[in-house]
Length: 462
Ligand code: BES
Ligand code: MN
Ligand code: MN
Image (tube, rainbow, N blue to C red; front, side, top):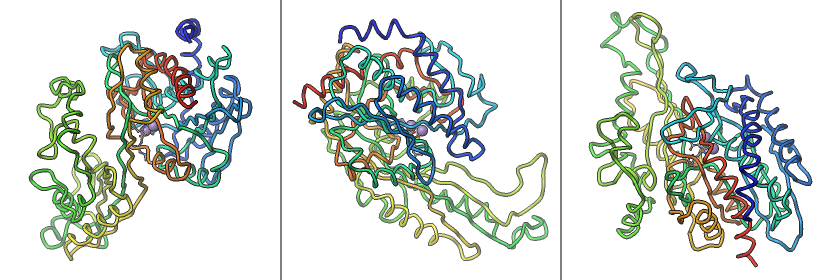
C-alpha cells in the first residue's frame, strides 16, 4: 500500500471539503428541534458510503434515529471488519463562547495543529473520525486492494445513550456478524506519540430533585424556619466526597479493580507533562482522589461529578426567595467490573438515606453503560499497532481512556467480538466544548492508517 500516502496527498482538498459539508448539518440528537437535520445527516452518510464503494447501504429504522448500515462483501471466506461510528453531535451551547459559528466550519492553525484544524461541532466527535473510514474505504475500493469484507454501522444517538442501537444490535446479530469491530471515536496521546485505547469507563447518569416547601417562599418571612432545598442539595452533594476525595457512597468501590504496582508503573511510562496539563487548563493545581496520579484519576479510577445544578432565582438583579425545588445532574464514571445498574441503585439508596426529613428527594436514572477493557495480545491490537508503526514511525502505546462508549460492552456481549479503538483525536480538541476542532494532520493520518489495519488484520487472520 505504498500508494496510500500519494492517494491522500492527491485527494486531500476534496477529503477536507467533503467533511466540511457534513459538518454543516447540525445533527444534535439531544434537541428535538434538530430532528430533521439528524435525519438529513443519516442520508448524507448513506450517500457518502455508496459513493465510496459500499455495495448496499440501508437507512435502518429504529424506535429513534435510524442506523446507517452499509456493506461491501467481497468473499464470504474472508474476514469481516465492522466499522462503528456516530453521526450525531453534542449540542453547541454555550454558543456565545465559540469563536466562529459551530456549524460553519473553518480551518485555523493552532499550536498543536500547525497544519490547521477544522473548527466545528462534531469535527472530531465523531463526524471527522467516522469520515476517515469512509475515505479509507474509497481508497481501498478505488485501488482494488480491499483485503476483506467490510460492514458499516453508523448511529445517530450515541450522545444520548445509544438506546436505539442496542435495540438494533439485539435484533440483527447475523447481519452484523464480524471478526473485529473497529471504532475511531477516541483520542491518542499526541501527534508524535500514537496510542491505542484499551479501556473505556462505564457510566451511570442520574438527575436528582430536592423539594422543600410546596411553593417558592419569601426568604425573609420564612428564611431560617424551613429547609431551603438548594442549601440542602449542595450539602448533600458536598458529602458525596470525603476529605481525600474518595466517594462516600457505601459499596461504591467494592468491585473496583485495583491495578498492580507493575501495571501502574507501565501506565506511568506514557509521556505526560503535569505542567503543560495545568497550563492548558489555566489551573494552579490539579485536584482529585488522594493516592493516585492525574492519569490514573482520569482513567482507572471511578468518579462522581455534578454536570449541572439549578434552582431558585438566577435572573438579573436580586430576588429574595426560597425555592421550592433544587435540581442537579450527576454522572458517575465507572471502571471495569463496576455494574452501572448496581451503582445507580447504590447511589439512589444513599442519596435518599442522607436527605433530612425536612425535604423530599427524587432520583431519576437517565442512562448508563458498562466499562470496557481490551487485552493487547489479540490480532486486532497487533494489526492496529503495526499500522500505526508504519504511518507514525513508532509503535503505539496502549492507554485507557476516561471517556465512555457504552455500546462497546454490548457489542462484546451480543456480537462476541473484540473492539479496536483507533482514535485520532487529541484531548485538547475540545470535544463537547466550544471551539471543537480536528487536526488536518490527524484526519489525513487516520485515512492513511486505517487501510493498513485492514491489510494487517486480514493477513494475520489467515
Ligand atoms: N467519543 C466520545 C467518547 C470518548 C471520547 C471516549 C474521547 C474516549 C475519548 C463519545 O461520543 C462520548 O461523548 N461519550 C459520552 C457517553 C455517552 C453515553 C453520552 C461520554 O463519554 O460522556
Ligand atoms: Mn463520540
Ligand atoms: Mn461525544
